[in-house]
Image 1 (cartoon, rainbow, N blue to C red):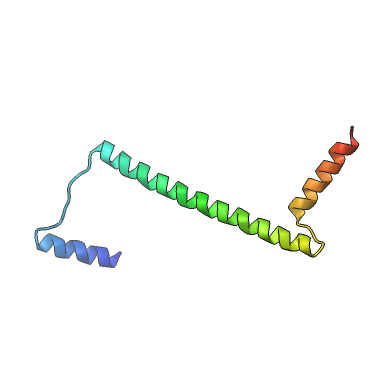
Image 2: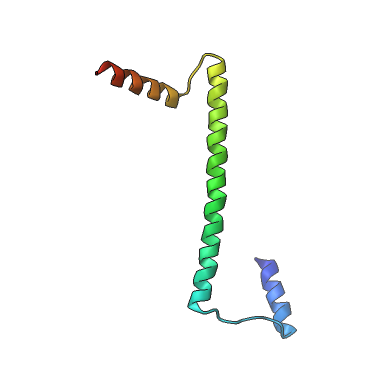
Length: 84
């Protein structure tokens, strides 16, 4: 932040500081673009985490173990199949 302040002071003293006020539609467009990029980034993170969880569950399965999520699914399946 201090670096940005120093840059702004330098630009101001050189007469190059841009203080243009953006229109509401320009601000909205920037915010929309920022949120879109953030959504894409978080979606990629979620996908990566799901893949990682699947890998861990596979490792557990390879050793005859299961995650709590898999155990819950198995129990739900057994409960549903027994109720019919």
